[in-house]
Length: 507
Image (tube, rainbow, N blue to C red; front, side):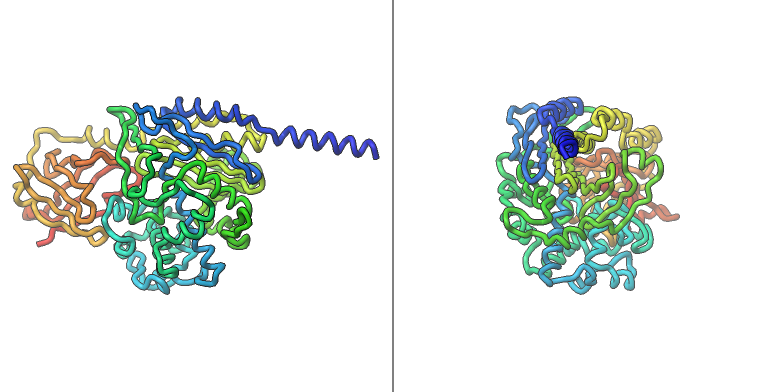
């Protein structure tokens, strides 16, 4: 018996030792990584067993400034907002106000996908939240980007986004369907989804710094930054995501996100209040859309055997334990949330630039608690990030293909006019002071001057700095009689797909 007790005591000592994590070492690692990645400012929170073990700011709110980031500094969390939308719907399901299997058209009669009436009538609330409706990844984002349209108008235009794969037979990350989910919440509750999430989740949790519009930005807000080839990292303006807020409009802090994570890790309950019933919480973290993993993709994340998407959450296994996570990409800000329910561990990384530092940091921190891997994730990801040029190579390829000393085959006056695309709306081209100007009907911030590039193609010189794209061209298409018929765009980037627009000239 004494021998058994001594063995048990030894096991308890070993377990206690393995549970200890050097938070000070993590703190130093984060700051070193920030400097290595040239990130102006960031905030990190770690929660464990219902307690905040780290909540801290690093660097400055704006490059060149002196204001330090702290745990209450707000950043755009972008697509990490999707989990809030899913949780709101989970509450409404529990209250009996809707069902996951309800058809979207029961609430939004105008809802249509790629002109297919049968498919459109079959889409459920559940389908909206797991990226399986048949739309391609980021397809149609050009509809809502910097738009003045309402969410309903955006959803109606989404009817013209092309089908990428058969309904429920693939994965395409679609912001548009979460905008639709936000409108379902509005229809069911009679109030905007923003008001519902504040009343039922954010305010009760004490998320005092969190807002859902740049018009409500507090003074303690970080400034977005964009890495550029010519000028390095530069500050840019906050962009309004009011219309697509259900897809990514929340702006929050490390301290507030810590509260959100602790509630989720505690089975949807916190401080005596049940925010999400456990049954619904399990459903959100159940794979609804599974990904095929190659041997290479398995090896890139040690201990991973499956990956998929739940409802508002990305899911996978990691060394035998389930991970619920999500990333967020906003104009000038990237973020990531990672939770390991079995360990009651949550990590959030918020940054004020478009560098992918948040993923390696979350893995590094998780590994300190899992005691499974000594891999130094940050330099590995940094080397990988620097070896990729993103769309820079595409831009250089186009610049190299330019044909100098060419002229347009038509007069400027023939290019003027209104061009219409059913997925987007009107785009106008007018001549002002012997220069062509282009304006997007619903997005004045996308206005630009057109400068001759070659033949009947013009370079788009944007009036404003944009986070996702710089260089771009637009060609005037002609019929056999040299009559202008339409526009074709080529704006290399990985998200806002102008090439999906094919506006025709309106006679």
